[in-house]
Image 1: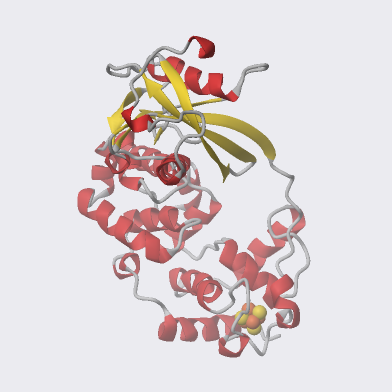
Image 2: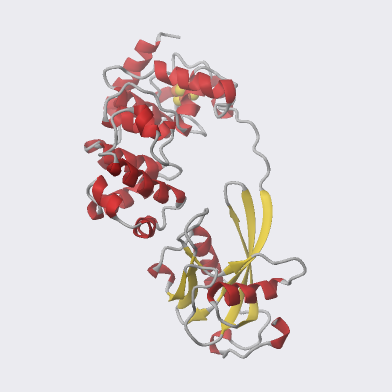
Length: 370
Ligand code: SF4
């Protein structure tokens, strides 16, 4: 294999011809790089583009974003998923502004909340021209294949070796471009399935292309914990009774139909009634089962049983939730789980526990569910 200098040259020449024209590349300010990097983690670029435009129009400067409320930022993020990123973005913006802006220094960037080695490397190299490496999923794949590495790129010596290799490949003259070129190569050419080796600037050097699809090798993940919960779907025409979770935790600040975990010995139906009583302070009764949906969090596999529920007339109050009201789903920042539950409820067949059309039914207390 040729030395790193030659690999860098060929990669940059390829990037100059094939780089996608993306808005954050036109004006790579530290703020734009922070925003785009957090948005692009685990999300396709096509999906990110309208969100990037929306954020930069509403909050043109880092200071504007820092002055927003966390809820406003989370609401604007609605639909992009992985909401922890929105909260980290807001916290990082506040902390950076309190220190006079995003620092032109990788260790200082790492001290900001939510900025890990990858994001610090991106801001450092792309916005400030610091010759520092970065490794994301694309870079892991390209470099594992280039060097035909068997080691797990996410832990121990495999991870360390990959960062060292990435460092060798950073151009001292164009660090931001060489890092972006490496990621772009992974996104466009060295794809997880069927990489286009014939179009790759490193095809003559690549030691792992004969078994590219089996690289990188990652240690098997622990099986997720399986949990079961219930969600109570209360309708009022096109509106649902929705509740906003208290801040903190995986889905903090996001909206959903009230849900609860069944307690030991408690039926699913009773748990659905409790979700309304404790969650939003209304009495309720179950009128039908709507089936179940599944949702995978990073380490948990959730089966969510959906129930059609009638609630007593009146305004919901904030019980175990921060806030609750009847709203159309598009009016609030629903979590992805909440979106799935509402959409499944809309498509579900009529309730199986109630013969009459539940939308015409009126609430009457149901002693059996108390
Ligand atoms: S030659 Fe193929 S496997 Fe090797 S880096 Fe290029 S695209 Fe990836």
